[in-house]
Length: 355
Image 1 (cartoon, rainbow, N blue to C red):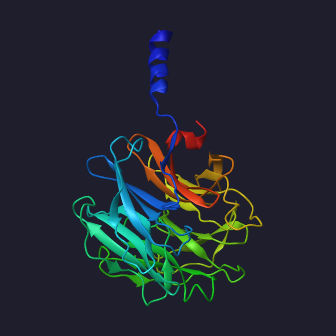
Image 2: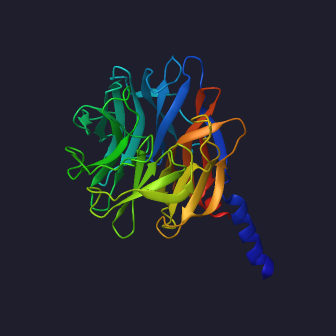
Image 3: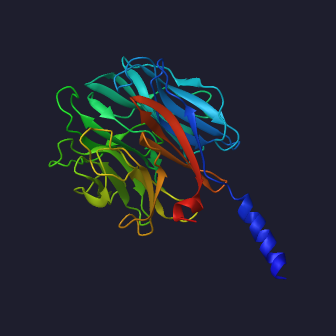
């Protein structure tokens, strides 16, 4: 009787998916930066990957870039050849893909269209045919100034409200003290309104690169990048329209973005960030890439594990996609010597709990 039960359990354990990692697209001299990706599950179970591909230059935020796309039919183990998802309609670039399956069933796409250091706009489009064609773009942000969003930031609340967290300055060439706001839409993205502003006056770089997640009690948590050695947080009691004064989350961090999501199978929150102190050289402290779990809605964090600690690299701008296989797919840049390749790592959800 003992062996009747042990053998099936052992076989089931062997059948569990194992962590998998790969370079999706390596940087080259012609494309020195392949970054800021997002992944969404299509109706047929395949995956759509959208990412920024910079062409030429030094891979800075100001170079020419398009948003490219690939598809996978094997849960991210292999990807199709790239195609253009959004051609470069900006005077500088288009970048930072956000994909989201809306409650209506349509697929949404948001991204930055950058014309200058004083004119960057966040645009929104939808697709009824799984990303083959897209509606005309709606500009989320107004008036004209330098508005920006990260990849994988667009969310929809249980109420149906869409939230697009952004950072902004009037002119990047004159000041890099950014502030955050959240644009919200109650008509499926046809029109947008701006929230109150979040700032950290004591920070030289201000409040930056926000991400949001809905809490179980209906409030919304905003995570905030700062240069004060910690990830900060702000809370909205009204669906993202107004925000509290930001406070530290007691997560040590350099000046780098974090990403947050809810684990569907457990209901817990998960955060991805660089678990490191700020270094002397900006961006070279983005190591390692770490995940942690919160079972109390972000008040404390445990099961801290390094997702990537490959020596010689830095990592940032993560996307998070939960798969029906019981896995979670992360994309992020892996940088070495100013060459930014797009990397992915796929782990079972149980791995994040140390199992």
